Image 1: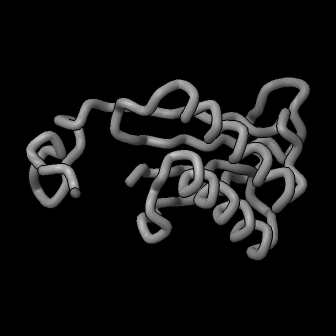
Image 2: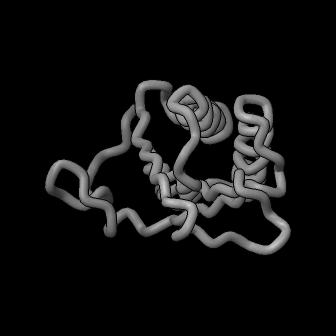
Length: 125
């Protein structure tokens, strides 16, 4: 169950926000084999005067940060990057150049689940 944080400029309509969140979630379900019901996601809106983005990007620029258990192969990560970018373009007309994605992979002993390190949990069969 990855933790997903989407950060973008404030001011988009609620329907577009939902489309963005759904686009990212659907990509994690398809590319990372995350169960549909394991949605652990938040969206952070930043006032335009407090959000700076790289030169050459538009006001649509957003970041997607995903914290997940380590171990997925580079091909699976590449598929996730492509699916997120494609889904955002289709769902909210966000250009690929306006999407930046970062995967954080802290070791399982750095995850606390149900009061214990994830490294002490047995994998689901």
